Amino acid sequence: MLDIKQYKAQVTEAAEKIRAELPAGTGVPSIGIILGTGLGKLAEEIEVEKALPYGELPNFPTSTVESHDGRLLIGHLDGVPVLAMQGRFHLYEGYTAHKVTFPVRVMGGLGVETLLVSNAAGGMNPHFRRGDLMLITDHINLQGANPLEGPNADAWGPRFPDMSEPYDLELRELAKEKALEHGIKLQEGVYLSVMGPNLETKAEYRFLRRLGADVVGMSTTPEVTVARHMDLRVLAMSVITDECFPDALEPVSLEDVLEAAGEAEPKLTRLTRAVVVTIGEGVAA
Ligand code: HPA
Image 1 (tube, rainbow, N blue to C red):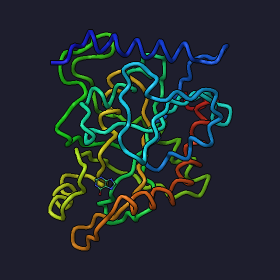
Image 2: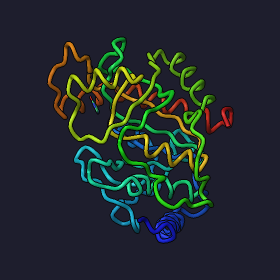
Image 3: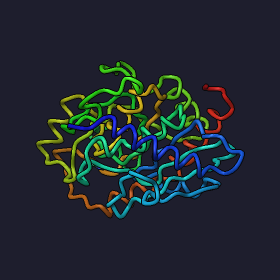
């Protein structure tokens, strides 16, 4: 079983190291961002004051996926202080749910209050098209793992955290408003997470669609679960990288997924920037 005391100590150690690396006179940003597949380029828009490779942070896992860099960025996005994870961890890499969510615990420990999450996902809703963006309104965790398993750290959050509205309504309204302002089509729906790494069979897509999901992916629910456990506000968006219609399913490669993510990235980047700026102005705070 997980040694929760040791795990907490590891989180504290990593947080202290990051705090020590903060540029002089800089407070800890209140906005954390997880740059998944499709939002990596946002990192280029961040005025980076400090880039900390995960390998240099105590107890951090290191990313094994080539399409994900592994660095924690401290800086400003359009003048708003942010802490961004360039590269995230997935269960399919072999990490436990506790490892996958370690950086979120660290962000929470540092004082991050709002977490923005992005991911690549397969679209099962027949109204969705490759390249669309989707605002996540709710999720279904079918990963067979839970980052809250084991002893609860009461200082972080309750044993049985509420999940009636994991994705902050105010932030969702803000994202929709900004999407409209910028002329960006923004779908809305339910994200379902699986373990991966294989994509689904036709029968699985048919099954998952019937469960009530609009898109399927291999990340996000662990981080969001932990963020909600710590009472962080969460906003999450998916880039639809492939169309998962069981009666017309085409083979999909990682290259296809990355290409679609790359094409949709400017929209997601623009929208995220607009949202961050407004949060920074305190309008949605
Ligand atoms: N299934 C699961 N995860 C994914 C998919 C998919 O079709 N596309 C991108 N991530």
